[in-house]
Structure formats: structure tokens, C-alpha cells
Length: 416
Image (cartoon, rainbow, N blue to C red; front, side):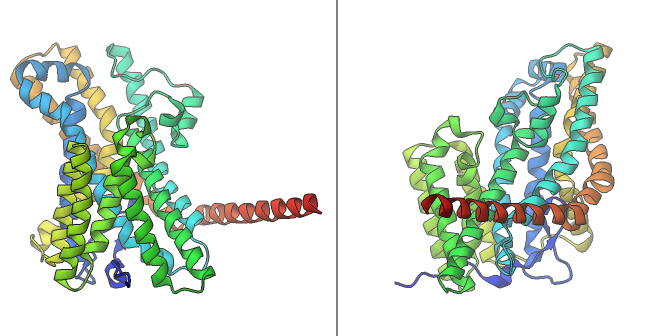
């Protein structure tokens, strides 16, 4: 039985911006114009994350919990699941880029991972400095368990290498665990695609066969995560724990990418069936939410949904959504300083606590928009096309090849 290719190369056209996210390609129109839905989902999820952290840290959260207990309970317990939106859309966007990796004539894995690391970590380290400064200022006027302790150099290095969760170091800012997981997930996708490309070339097969192999491997990893790794919280510092949601986004993109609506619906139904069986084995609300997000994206792709906004609204949506990573990075020190002001003023009323939380959220957006324009975009552009990152990537490739040759030569000598 011939394997039906999920992936359509024409679906891979997308304009790239900072952080490796895809945005609406207004010059080409379809299919990139459908990405308004991803921009909207990212924008909503980023705001939920900010309010989730406002409900979890400092005297503002304590005051809100007294006057608005049900709202704060929902934000604290359920708001964290907004990260599923980023996981699913991340997998969806990574699947869009797979064909571009296969079109490269040279091995692409090291260069792609080095560029991704630069786009994520360079603005992240600047934001981490802001977080450490904000924490130091907060410690002067307020004592609260939400304020990180003064960091050691080893702790800073572990954060720079995205190893803080694996090494058991305390987080220097809220949500930094996700940046490490995002990088791990991207590396898994790149390495799987690189493996499939290598096997296809050595076997004399076409790049399309390599794409199909990539799809099968990713879907297999998705199933392994849903049925095993995601059911054990001991794995939550590794990509395998989150590959269920991330792989679901990729699988939905590939399944819904067929030009034949009936085939797309059939493939999408098979993906949904796998997830439903996993939920039957063990129900997890986060996976159910990931499935809903994936179905929303897949339905929009199958129906070839037209623009839901005018050009002006669409431009505004892209602008705000593009700054969602910046908001994720910088909102924690703003939240700390908002809590300091609230604590020093001695406020505790229902209206004032709600007002201060809203003002803190608004201030986070102001800082995020400035950070996105002045810090994230220049650093991400440099990481994507900068000479230094490319040289580092090529240097790592040369080192890996020389190490391989040395090991091979050593083995031959020992065998002789």
C-alpha cells in the first residue's frame, strides 16, 4: 500500500521574523494569509500567561484571591494551560519549515539549531538581566517567596545554556522553563528531519521520501509522548514530555495540507483518533486543550479560511502577536515592581487590587513592545543571518566531522 504524503511543498511559503515565528505574507496572500488565526491564538495565550503569573505571585495575588477567589483560582489552576497554545502552534509552524530544510544541499541540522538558539537566547539573556535587576530592586522593599534569590554565576550560566531545569537550579524569571523546552522540541524536529534526509540520500530516494519519513517519525514520537512520556511528570524537563502537543500541531498541518478536502478530513480524523485513545487511557485536560487548538488550526487550513479582519486590523494583530515572545520575556520584572508599589502603598481593596493588576499588565505590554522593536528584532535578525552565528555553526560541523574521522582512524588502528 502506497503511503499518502501528508506534506505539500507549496504550503511551506512563509515570511520569517524574530524568534523563528511565521507571520502573514501579505505579498503572496494565500496560504500565508490564513496565519491570522495563529497570531490571534498566540496573542490571547500570552495575555493569559501574564494574568496567570499575576494571580500566582506577590501581595497583588493575595489581595485578588480575597476579593475575586473564583477568578484567581481559575487563572492560577487553569491559566497555565495556555502554554498548550504555544506548543501546538510551535509544532504547526515547525512543520511548515520542514520542506525548506530539505531543500538545503548541505547538512542543515547544526546551523538550524545554532540559529534557533541565537534567536531564542540572545533576547532572553537581555530579559534575564532585566529580571535580575528587577528582583534586586524588589528585595530592597519587599520580602516575598516569589522574588528570586541573588543568583550565582553557575546559575546564570545554566540559564544561558537552557539547562536550569535539568540541573535543578531555581528559575531567575517566570516561565523560563518553556524557552528551554521550546529549544529542545525544535532540536528534535530538526534532528528527525536531518536523519530522514540522510537516510533518503544514502538510500537513493527522493527528498519527498525523506519528508514522508520525517512525518512518520514525528507522528510516532507524538504517540509515544501521549501514551507514555506525558503521563509521567518525571519527564517534564525534557522535550519528550511535550512532544504530544508539539507533534500534534505538526501532524495536523501535514494531515490538513492535502488539496483534496475529503482526504484532509480523513487524515485529520486519524490524528484525532490517536489523541482520543490517549485521552481514554488517561484523561489530561492539557492534552484535550491541545487537541481543540489543533482542530481549530486544521479546520482553518482545510476550509482555506479567508481573512477575518480588514488590512488595518490585520496589521495591528500581527504587530501585537509578534511581540508576544517579548511580553513573555519581560513581564515578570514588571509584575515584581507592580507588587512592590502595591505593597509599599498598603493597598488591599478589591477595586484597587484589580486596577493595579490591570495597570501592571498594561505596563508589561508597553515594555514588551519597546523590547521587541529595540532588542528582540535586531538580535534575532543578527542570529538568523549574522556572520558569527554562521561561522559558529560551520565550526561545530567541522569539529564534528574531524572528531568522527579521528574516532574512525583510531578504531582502524586498534583493529589492526
